[in-house]
Length: 345
Image (cartoon, rainbow, N blue to C red; front, top):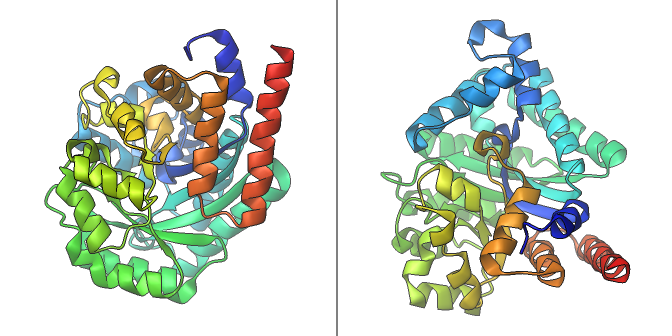
């Protein structure tokens, strides 16, 4: 249904919130080209067409390799500020009003960017993006799981002791295989004690046991991906009963081979079980997608019309960590967009 030009236009203008989107992973070819031109020795193409070819992955390991080459382009606070602000500009073009951007401070601090300068750069970009572009950014600071407990300690220290104003939640990303969730419990406990929400990745490339671990050990309030939850009816029931949302990223799941095809994606089973599903883009330019495209895919897989798509957008608002006034404003904006669409139709 979502392939119709009418619904494509409806989605394009639909005010949206996004809850699962990575900072570096949102660097579009336009942004990467600018960073590559600043740092030509890095060997990343600065021509947008060459970059499109560069961003073609063979598997998850290759994706990680390319991702890290882009991380390596972010060498100083000015690069961090440019990346963050320009991501907000790309979001504004998609009618994204609010985003919880997953940021990995450890990736920058271990490359020599001082933690204070890093935080100042993202906060300056956040304030400017809201004032100039109308996009509200909030941060999820995540532990890169593959970097081990030293990265967990550094991430937790920055999140709890430096606590930038835009920070709302604490996450865990990177590969799941060989990176058990329970080892990060002490770090999540510290973050939660300071008022941060727990939003780890789980069940993307591993089974439902990883999701259970995230719920029990890390006290997850939302689950990043949770794709394999559909393999465990009891887990789906638990998520639905406890109102624990899933951050679903359809194209990402295909690109990383977490799911074989869009047609076999378990989003329908999640919705049928009563789980609060939100639609997200993960690392959009790297996967050749954006949030509007993900909404169109979800609408097709779920057989949604415009009111159904608007309900998906409201799910993200409901599952977000916006304040009540912000949730009310954005929900009203979604309702107004739908009402105007129905009047014109």
